[in-house]
Image 1: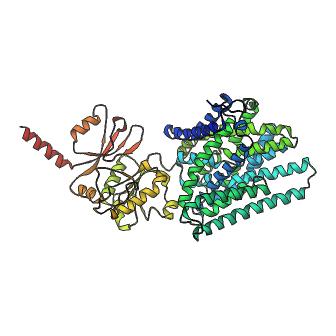
Image 2: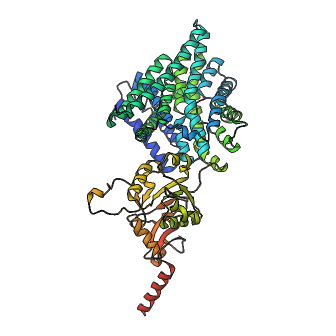
Image 3: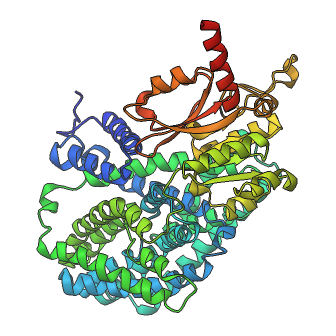
Length: 615
């Protein structure tokens, strides 16, 4: 094993690769085990850092560690700004405004009081750290929302609050810090106010100008397609650096505004830009969490005493819920959603990174207890991440605010095959919706009592009005193979490629009409095209649901129904899985079977004919 020449720990290159491996590995393991990814990343960082001593970020990365973390946080916040489409704010606008303009100042006050009276910090340190505690952390909220599958409005409230309040919290800390500087030094109050106002104005102007300029350059084709992402990255880092040089931490405000502007500019290439940024953010969030956790020392962690534990509890039970409930009082937000938002306040990367920075600066001003900011921030992040990681989903279910407890299915196309499949899935008590851009095609689905959505599934209206989080599986089954392929390809990142299916495409003799096999979804059912699948139903075949038991096993069912085609299984643990022509059905997957079977009369006639032939 290569050790660092600085004495102890890994070589910087190995350390860098280890951070990436553990970060992505933690996310993958969390996906497989259905656990909060942040929890595993914190554990991984603590194990390789304070416990084993393999990773010592301060020694291995030196002076580059702080700017690395700062740029990573800026990119994370920019990606958060890209998710803030104003159309998604329609139902949550009032709540978000109240959480920002009323909840944030009240949260600053409540957090400062908890830090002073419970944690025992001086008012100077409490005021600065209390401002940072406004931040709830999009790096934590985003994976929690994916896991919990919240309804659209509470999810929008938590997402917008987390992203908007991130730069607000950082600027509140800057404001408090400037006041402390005035009190501790000979700097005049007017100079501090001027510097703060100038920094906010420059950051806002830079963010708007950069967003407007980038959108115009992309629309006018001043930037070739292959250079759009590199140009975006360079401009993002430049905007952050320039704003931060005017006023520390104002760069976070600039990049958030820049992302918000681009998100609402209706760029043709926006989906590709956002997808790439999402992938980069997964890597950055993983790396930053592990670096910050590994950077904690056992000596620092040992300073956490009973007052720290009581402080964390006071934040979770009082300093977070009270400001939220007061801010949302007498609003149109239902009380269940108020409770969920009030008791959901995980802290993340921005809190730890900014808290450590201001802790060092306050210590430099001679405020001794400021060295407790970093361990308290880490304790708060660790406690809230673990708590909300394991409690958000049960709490949302108890309040009835999850999109659905059962795995839902969205079927694109209102044909006879789609309706029959939807009716069979409803027998399994699964949420089903049939979508079609042709209103007449939905008539049979409506008469069958299925939920329907009239419109193009790829439209912006569908993104804002459909509860996509309620559906785990997409089945594209219109009579247009090209449209099926387009929808399956475009929505694969939303549903996961393993959960997107379509009927077999018609095979063309000429290659000029054939679509690439790399596009589209997985095949479903009996390897049939739209017309073949619907013709089979016209011949008398039907979708049927059969429950399996220890007495009537999968092998027994197959022996009794040799011609049947298994389309899906619902496992004993509620896991829904669809099957194509080449997929193998295993016994452990099958609690209930959904299969295409000949009509009962045909099967009875076939059995009688077989008996007479045998006689």
